[in-house]
Image (cartoon, rainbow, N blue to C red; front, side, top):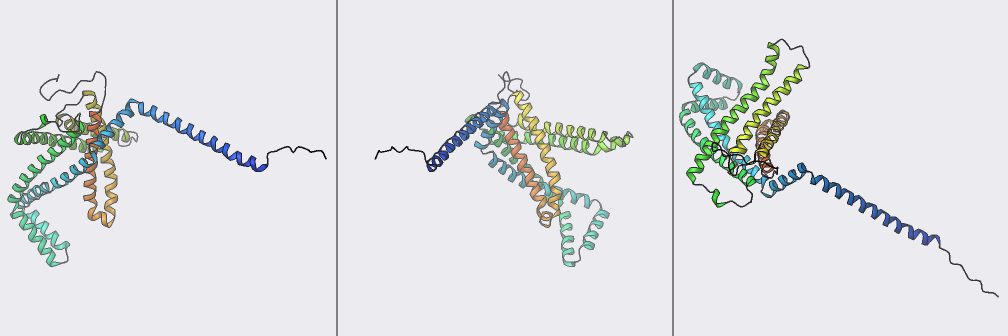
Length: 340
């Protein structure tokens, strides 16, 4: 019998086993191409000057413990409120002592609003004690407030120095005598308080006077004028914030920042601070609406406000310190002209 050679043919099983391998290789190539394209896109975005500057500022803020410094500033800010409250209570005591009718009305409201006679008697004696010791409380609170304010300013200065220095380590040349440091911090605190008073005054005037001005001019019926006045008030508030942060970023650091970086970083801080105030204004009523928020909402909101303010200030300090602009000049020392 003739031998017939069998022709080998691919079985369906072998075809099915090779197809997944080809599909897997093709899928891996597509994934690699997608990752490569995404990496190139990210590299291009990171190469943009604004994005690269933001990354440098974020890296410096994190490397130099910006969040930890922000928490420390929040802690000292909250502690500084205690002597301020002491001075406030003393001022209220002087007002009540010089106005017997107002004092009697306050005591009557306390007695009538509390059903427990023992608690009402305790509160009444507390008010009388506060009025009698108003001088001692006021003087001690004033000195403690001055000391805590200077210490707070020193902590804020050191935190900004940490972000502004070229190197993380402290330069021995930056060390000051204790007396010189306290005098410098007292002057800085005085200037900051003045800038804060101007800021709050402009903000309150811009917020409350716009409706009065519109009504006085007889323009209350014009609907499009209301958003225009809101924008004007917002602009005034941001300008007031700008003055506050300009004082912080120009006066506090020993290493004077570059002019263009200072002006731009201050504008970012002013807008960010206005955003923080807007968010806190929206959130505080919601916190106070709950039973737990009614007891602790004001404290939590105040601490959150201090914390966000501190983080914003330190991040903008890092942003200013990491700026790179061509032909930018260093800001001069206050009252000394341009530095070399």
